[in-house]
Amino acid sequence: MFEQELEMEKKQASSGPIIVVLLLIALFLGGIGVVIYQSNVTLKPNEANAVLTNLLKNGMPVKVTFHTGTVSYKNSDIPTDAQYKLLEKAGYIKVKGTADFAAKVELTPAGKDFLASMPEVTPVSEKDGTTGYTLLLGTKKLISVDKITKLAMKKFQVD
Image (cartoon, rainbow, N blue to C red; front, side):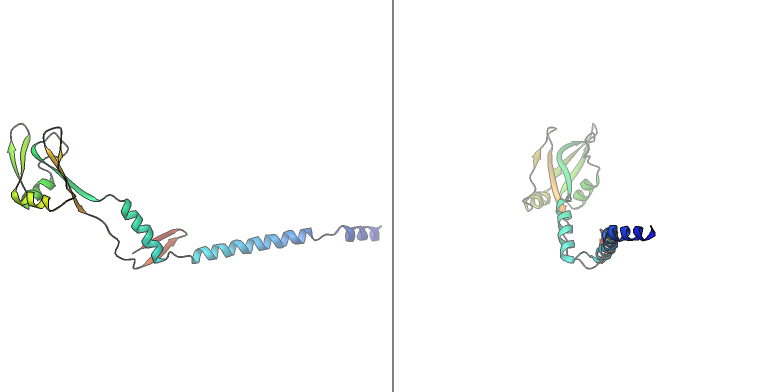
C-alpha cells in the first residue's frame, strides 16, 4: 500500500508550486529593484527650471494701487497707507488733508511724467469720482538652478 501511494504521488506531482514560489521571488526582487531605481531618480536641472518657471508665471505679480482725487478714509485704499507715503516722498503725488475723513490726492508734474513713461498703467475712473492707478512693481524671474537636493521620493529642494 505504501508503494502504491508513492506511485500516485509521483503521478500527481506537478511543477505548479515551484512556479508559484519562483514567481513570488521574482515579484519580491522586482519590488526591490523598483525601490532602488526610484531612490536613485533625481530631478534634472532643465526639468526643475521648467517647473519653477511655470510656477512663477502662475504667481501673482507685485502691484500697488493708488487713487487721485478726493480719497475717503472709508475706502479700503486710504491716503495714509504706505504707497501714498512712498509716492509722496518720491515727489509723484501731493496729499492734502480735508474735512470729513478724506484727503485730496493730486499728481505732481513728476508723477505725470512717471506714469506716462509706463505704458502698462492706465487710469481708471472710479464711481466715487477718484481715478485709480495700478503700478506693476516687479515680476519674479528664475535666473538659474544651482543645486537640487532630494528630500523624499517625489520631493526636492531646488536652490
